[in-house]
Length: 184
Image (cartoon, rainbow, N blue to C red; front, side, top):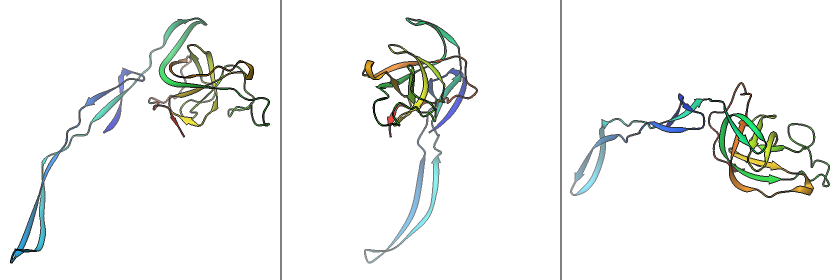
C-alpha cells in the first residue's frame, strides 16, 4: 500500500484511488526418492501467473478557506480536523520549570500543547467549547491530539474528540496528513 497526493481532493480527506490485488505464483520443485526415502530436493523455478497490484490511497492537498460563525465571532479557517482533546494547567505554584512553554516564555491563557513536529509554534486555532488557541507547548503525545491550557484556578477537564479549526493565514508549509493521536 502506498499514499499519493491528490490535488483535486480536499485537505484531510482520503480515499482509495487504486484497489490492491494479490498476485499468484507457482513454484516447481523436483523431489527424488530412493527406496521410499527422499534423497534430494531441487527448486526448478518459479513462474508468476499474476503480478500483484499495490493499493494506492489518495490524500487531499486542496486547501479551501472557509468561514464559520461561532459564539466567539466569525472565524476564517483553512483546515478542520478531528483531534483528541485533553487539558492541563501550568502549575505556577510548583517547581520553577512549571508554567513555562516549550516555544519560549511563560504560559498565557489560550496557550495549548500540540505535536510540534506537525504543528509549529504560534499556529492559531479555534476549538469549540474552549475558544481561540495558540500552539505554544509540546506534550507527551503525537498526532491529532491537543492539550488545552487553563489557569490553575479555573481548570476544566477535557477528554473527548473535537474538531479543531486552523485559522488563516495559511502557513507556507503544512502537513497534509496528521496521524491519529497517540501517547509516547
